[in-house]
Length: 254
Image (cartoon, rainbow, N blue to C red):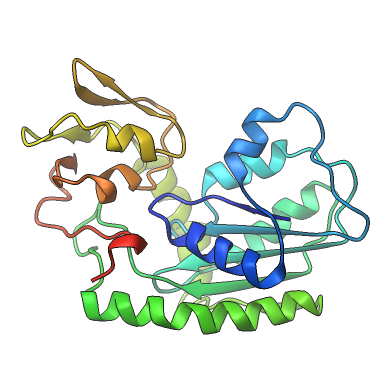
C-alpha cells in the first residue's frame, strides 16, 4: 500500500508510477486519514510506503500530522518513503524516521526523486525552465524503477540527496520558515479570475471555497501551491511574491 500527499502533482505522479511498478494500491494520505474511522487494514507481511514532497527541507507538516493520526490494523512489516524535491532534501529522512519511530514502527528505507521546482513564494524562487523541467520528468521513470527494485527486495537503504548544509536548512531555517512564512493570508485572486473554481477543486486540504464567485482561502493551508499552478488564467497570487513567476504542473510540461 502506498499513501501519498501531493499539491501540484509531482508526488502523485511518482506515487502512481511506483504503484504500477510494485503492483500496489495508491491512496491520498489526507483522504485516508480524514475519512476512515476504523483502522486501515494491512495484509500479512504487507509493505507500507509514503510519498510526499519536501517543503523547506523537511516533510510537510500535513504529512507528519496525518502520520501521527494514522491507525493501522497491524504494524507494517516494511516501511519506506519516497520524497520528491526540486533540488535537495536536507534532513528530511531523519525527520520522517523519527516521526515513524514515535508511532512504535521502524522506517526501513527512504529515497528522493528529483522533480521540477514549484515553489515561487520568495524572491529568487521560480519554476524551472521548460528544458530543465522536461529533463527532470524524463529522468523520473528510471529513478523510480531503481527505487522500486530496492523496495521489492525490501532493502534497508537511505538514498536521499541531502545537499549542502543539511542540518542548518532542516533544523534552523525550516522551523523559522514554517513559523513565519506559511500563512495563507497573502493568497488572493487577481481581477482576471474567471470564477471557474479550479483552485477549489485541486486544493488537497479543501481549504478554498468560492464566495460571490471569488476564491477565499481558509486557515488550513499546506502552502502546496496547487491553486496557483493549476489556475488556467494565472489569476492566483501570493501577495506580490508571485508576480512575474511561472506556473508548472506535470500534466502541462513544456
